[in-house]
Image (cartoon, rainbow, N blue to C red):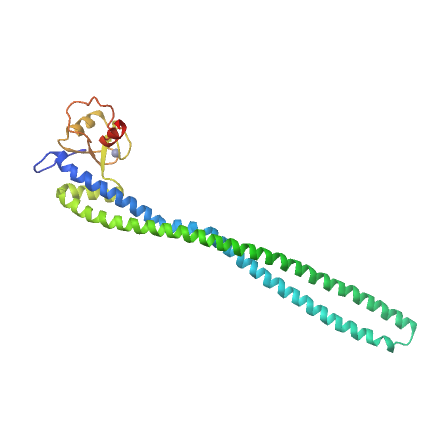
Length: 268
Ligand SMILES: [Zn+2]
């Protein structure tokens, strides 16, 4: 069924015109809600570079701490080793035979070699710490800059949200007023379709297609919609169809169904 009888006084176009106004408000309300719904996500995305740099800074700081601990541990090993070597050296005078003396010298030589290993490890740690500290300093500057960038973006998004919220409040008042001007039965049907489709319930017929679903409307139905005697719905998307111009019996000579606004815009 694509034809609905409209009861009461007035032509269909007269009845539909407050509904068309209501739909304009509803569409803007939906648009605003959609933009506002995405704001937290946009904030999260805008914050990502700052979060990433902060993570790198934290990781680098931890790596510095680990490397410092490692260096201290090598330093302690070295100290213990030095103490042991000193003890060994002090026993040198107690030695009696040449053989014992030679063996002891060999031990001291080995001990010195080991000392070199510890010193090398400490040096590697110090270089690592130095490099990590440089990275941390650079990252810290980056974090600071990114924090400023994010704060600016957040300010803009917060402003946008506030502006939209105030526009929304005005629109909702206008929406209530506009709803009151629409015939009750028509409003109910409109609200049902709107809820089911989650977007526009009314669709203009433009260039032979339904502006709602973009499918081609049968010519007879277009002619019926143009006559604007009864309410017709799109056979594909079930949206209520309307003709944007004055009701006409014959097909208009004007090609397509461009809106009046656009034509004024073009002639300027
Ligand atoms: Zn349709």
